[in-house]
Amino acid sequence: MIVRDKNKAPPTPVTPATSCFAPVLLSGVPMGFGDLLRFRHCDRTIFTLGEPVDPAGLRCPICRQAVRLGLMEAPVRIHAPIRDGHQTACSFLITSQLGAAGFSEENESELHVGISNSKGVVFSYTELGVQRQQEGWEQSIIVPLVAPGDDTLSFRMLWDQQLETFSNLNTWTGDRFQEHREFGSCCYGFALSYINHVMRSEGKEPITREHFTSQYILRRTEAASQYLSVYQHVCLHGYYSTAESHGP
Ligand SMILES: [Zn+2]
Image (cartoon, rainbow, N blue to C red; front, side, top):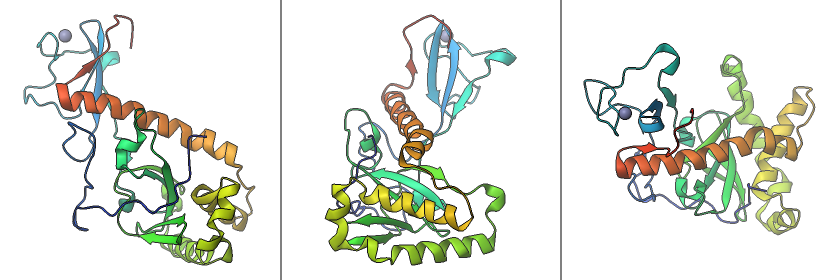
């Protein structure tokens, strides 16, 4: 199980509440996370920052030549999978005590999950009961729970109301945290139970933990881990390239 419960609230950021970025603990990465570009040149797959530094356009960091690619070889933009959870509405969020660094393979930090309301306030279950946080989730993996078209004002109001009511249930008090922990369901149990609460109210079948984890979580945590190792390398060395000369 990749998603582990964490018994403490995420650390309070040392940056002011108005800042868009929490401190990034990865060495060599200056601040927030950006997109990456992936393309083939010099018989390698190369990753660079999403915005080419050279105004003349994309240049291969290995041979230094301007990259002219055919239609089928157009660079692929890889969007940063780690984003500010407070800028997202009605989503399932995953963060760690170390911020984004907790998603990297070396750290294997405990992960913490929560649900955001329509205003980006994140609700999560901890040993102090349900926390409602307006900061601390600046570096999160986001799983949107609502299709953009369904995101109406009345839906948002209902979502916020349901989330508040659900969080006030006796099930999620601080003194019952250890009880939940025995079943391995603390913060993850709270978030998934809320999703199923909404599913039931819409007359849909609830989703199992195994299904939600395999369909929505693992793919994203693995992608975030891979992105981080490449992004960190690009920030330190300007680019990252595979050694092989096979296809992408
Ligand atoms: Zn080249």
